[in-house]
Length: 520
Image 1: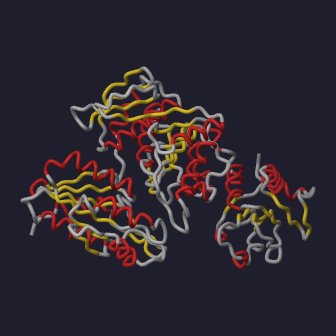
Image 2: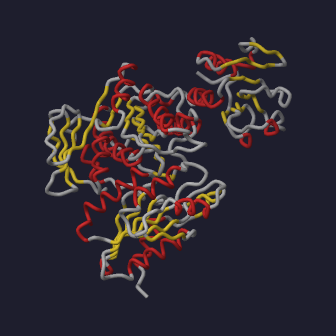
Image 3: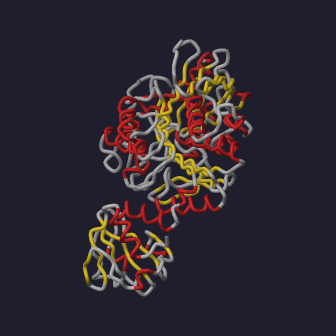
């Protein structure tokens, strides 16, 4: 059904959001009987700069009345807001309790509910969302002949094979439904998308029901005045995925598992769980998906899907955490209808994710580097566990090059240091991303949390210089094994400085280049 002023008002009223309609200086609860109000909107936007003839504007966030100046002359058809702006514009207004929720509902209708044409899979968790999303897309692409779309914090893919760098973990609702429509029109059958806690905090997925929701793990993160004030609030936002899904896939070993199962039971949602075992833990389980480390090789693992032995797998992505991500992807795929004996499951073995667990080396100087997006206590600890398990016998000297986000997630600054300081030889604190907080202040804040007198710590604000010094120092000590861990930016080709995205070569490119340069 086309989105018109009348259908928009009815939709918002049905969802309990509409307060009143302001139309020709009249205030009412429904649109008057005027044929002009049945003309479909030509566009929907939340950016006043894009308003044209027939546009519906949603005024969300820190909206100011002066943004509306001149929009009547540009053809504004109507606006949605939580404030009456009839003194500024003549266009009708739909006054609502929450413009962000309204934007999500209206966007879905404007794009003719593309989610109904796709099997939509949402993945949440503190760590592993992106890798699990890529692994899941690979299986579903293999199963469907390349008809699985992807929304991730790294890339978006709307045709099953073309990847473009993304800006947000979960897109703004208008952008998400626009891209869903493109994916559906491209013949996609599946959509795999990461769902962040902020997606529920600011209602980017309001009204969207996932065919499958996956909950990977949970640990404190994103705790700050502008994100989540407490861990409880963070977990509460994550849990919204459960009651907005038709099936839940969950890590059987996830913290707060009892609460997650109670959420699913209360909503009447079936649960499919997965678990990862060590080779000798001897547990007998009834989990739908069980991945067991082989024991003879740390990168091999055997997968049991219900009663079916799917065989032994080996990923191109190293680390125990990625075995768990692969188990999650297989659980999601089988819940989406992929048979337990399908060769499509083998697609996980070919997947790499840009900027995640990329191992680079200069064997001549016994220098190794890992580029990864690790950015909190759990992911840094998992990265160091991997280094210990694979390289610990060589007793490597470990340098961690890291920064932290500015203006938010303040807890990460302490947690990154606490996860690493007793396990490494050196910190190099450097620029990462910031809105308005100076890089130097962020680095100094991290430096204050270093309490181990045996670990070296220094600040090199320029990121390329920091990587250059760390790699050159490692290569200048060929008598020892050096491991340089570079975290936080991965393959991103920009760095955020004072609210602007500035061009950046990318950690992966910088490290690869430095390791291949001739020694001076």
